[in-house]
Length: 182
Image 1 (cartoon, helix red, strand yellow):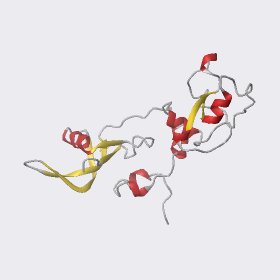
Image 2: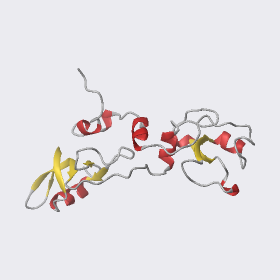
Image 3: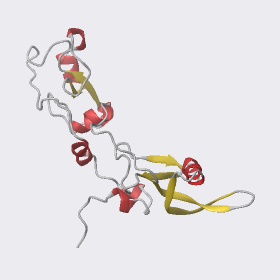
Image 4: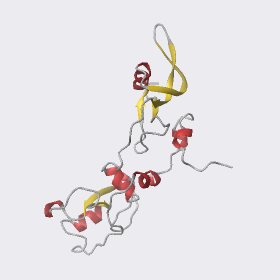
């Protein structure tokens, strides 16, 4: 029971975030319930007991007040890999995130910034081969020009959820924009 997590939804019943998925520990979810900050949506079939009460552990909660999401996605290593399809932008090799690095198209030592428009995913061999040069100088053209993605683009590039790793009460909220079976 100690590792149970609670899916956190915004007031419109959509997850606050898909990458990473918006989760709280079940203890934090209980605290928010008692402070009347969230609404209980679904529970596990497990009870947490105190000397005077037994309550089902929350599996899904929704915030009572809507939280406006940032328009632009956060500039993170994972989001760079997601934008680039977990592929090296020099050779096209697709790798898990642990096998990728990120590369500054214009090297930092030459004034390049760490931002969406100057950073790409790269495999280690390509990153080492390019070294402290521009793609033109290294004769390594980019497969895709780096750019700031939208939240929508990143959401749709997110690897498919493996429904087996999530509690059945979460599924209606994780797939709210998926095509329904006929």
